[in-house]
Image (tube, rainbow, N blue to C red; front, side, top):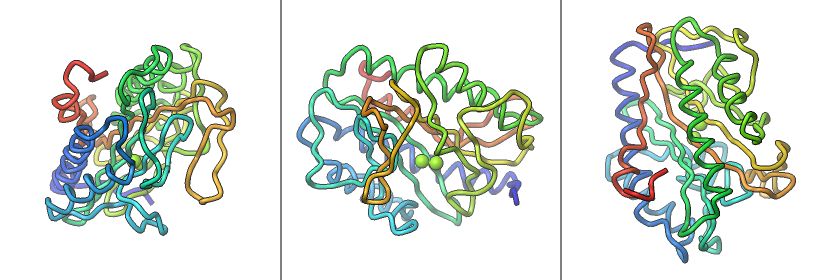
Length: 262
Ligand code: MG
Ligand code: MG
């Protein structure tokens, strides 16, 4: 069952997306060597609650954090922890959700901690660019396979691999709704996009092989070959005017990172 949102509902989703965007920017201010992922989690939770919103991920199927914080070879769903301290050269994917007025927002950004190798920086640049390649396809009449194909083609041409076990999703009154939005696929295949659909597009791209494993904590998804992975995500509304409507934003992160923004 795919819920098509009204204009009013899309504006409420935009509010949720705005809070997530600002929460990620608050986190961006604190990313540096020596900071724990638990510290980042507390920053995000305090910001979200100051907006009278609720962290979407906290207690979702028992998840213990406001953020998913996924360092280096962790792809997604890393659990924030006091003992997990960022160090120079790390990259950390920060995934955040906020719930207000009955609707969720969902967005993720992979940050660099201090100076990061050119090789890993290039992985981040490519993954982020692939998100926008996917978003270009997120318009009425296209299909989810067009999004997946655009992401996959862009990344594989540059020598990276696409994680298949985890996918984007519909967003609305529930954090995860239909349809699934895979990051790989065939052009013209899958569910057709209709005006009023709201989806999260979230490429998870690996430097090495595409295979992943889940740690014993039941959450942490890690690359099998332990090579780095990157993850960027926007929540997007499907429109009939041929242009995707992005409900989350990296603009506030850009204001914080300035010339370090990639
Ligand atoms: Mg997310
Ligand atoms: Mg998501």
